[in-house]
Length: 398
Image (cartoon, rainbow, N blue to C red; front, side, top):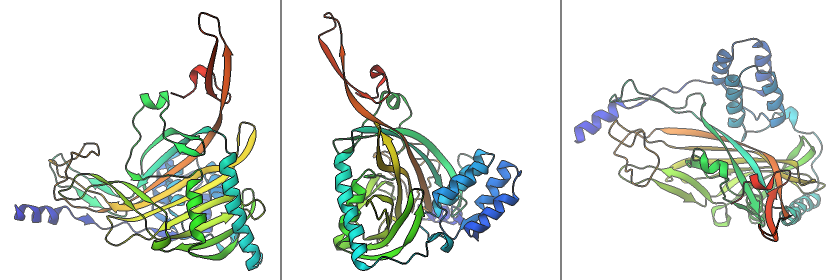
């Protein structure tokens, strides 16, 4: 048996990684302009051979996407931009305005904390659509059902899948609740970093922990709504309240299970100095070398949205990037089966797989309480909760 396993590991090895060309945002813009009229598939392949060395912000990404002609190149550009979400902005995009003094910096942070508490209480009950595109950089090629696969690590990011569902916010917190359409559709994939608390709890955790860790001025930055103050922070493990939830780990000779940790973390927070509203939150975890996952980072962008005729600052987009071992099974393993507790992986090759989840939040609607007068035979008064602008009978409520 030992000899067979040794042979398996000799053949099921990861082949060399692709060599990506490091480019700046300006070089990317020039390259896209020069590629005008190029076939969609060819342009997507060219983008897959590039890697940004600085952050491509959402405003520039939207302009670049609008000029592309095909879905393949748009998806390749989206993955490229998401992979840069945790990098530093180009120097030209950072304002040269002098930083505020220490007292003003503290006022901005205090205003953010006050605004967070106030906004959570002011938010109405609502629901919104969230659409997720998932990418990964691991490629496994099988020549036949029984063949030992060739494994390619650190390849160009490729689309894995995409799905849309509804997120609900009730009584000041997010609620897991399936609409009638979701109940009939394909189940949402569970694997990956669990994206929790984007409607307030995540901000509350970071803003609270900032006062127990280290915080320093970053820079002024221009957002779609105006200038924002960017702070850098660092939270040690003993002061951390950020929970990493990852599904699912498949270790050799163990059943599938979730991974949870409360690690130290650092990142950035972008705050409107006048209102205290948070417009971007970045969390970079510092996981232990003994952990089965190596990276679990999240970035959330916020913008003003209208809900029930009023304006609120809510999530518009989130990006999560994770790196974890990805079990590759032989023909008699768990291949083709859903992640489940009764599937115990054999001793297999476990290459690293980096995954990106790009989630967009839109179509915000408020819940309203409506009363409808019916006939005596139907009852006196029927109370129903319906989303703003929707027919009560079609409301996605249980």
